[in-house]
Image (tube, rainbow, N blue to C red):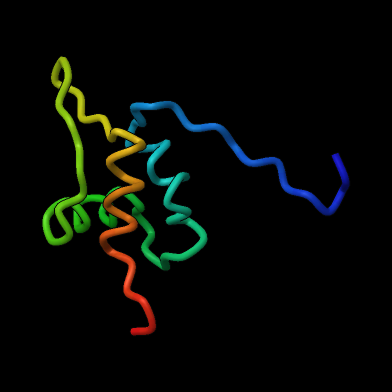
Length: 76
């Protein structure tokens, strides 16, 4: 791999909250000190898709990608 190319990280089909934080690049774009609060805000006010399995919250990658597409504003 060329030094100027970044290796894209693979994310699982069902992501944990930590994986989702990385997937959405929240540490890079948010000034929040607690990135979990950003996820809570997205769940409450932006209907972030998630599924509950065995008392754990997981985030389906495909649903997140569709959610991102729906949240994207063209030219606004």
